[in-house]
Image (cartoon, rainbow, N blue to C red; front, side, top):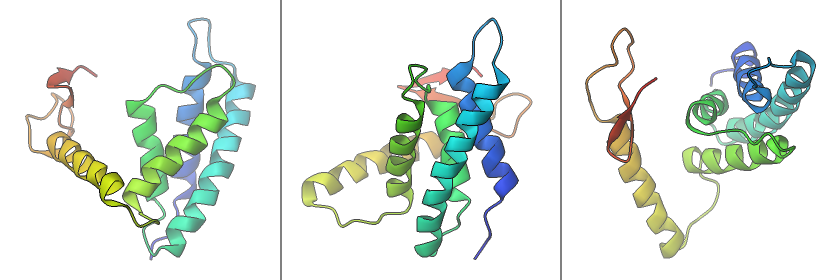
Length: 142
């Protein structure tokens, strides 16, 4: 089993925390560092569960990178709650811990279809190794 890449986890948390405080006037470093520390603490709780499941603990870091890329952190004081809930939800999809009913399991097929759409081969973004991002059939610019 792999170990958690703690520096990568810390960087991912700091990058996400920076979004919560971003403004055109500048990003306040002390609140960013404090929120990033809270994100790391919450993420480490999830790392333990992922390790106990026998999966790569770096899934947590990848989930945080996904949140940074795909979602907007609320800036109204709910960032820690939002982070904990969103990370738990993403990790439940990646590392399931519960048995689903027919109804709840049906949604997993929808998720699977969406992931297949996003990960199918497409033209690469110019100058990167990444495929273009798509949302509702449109390619989004970086």
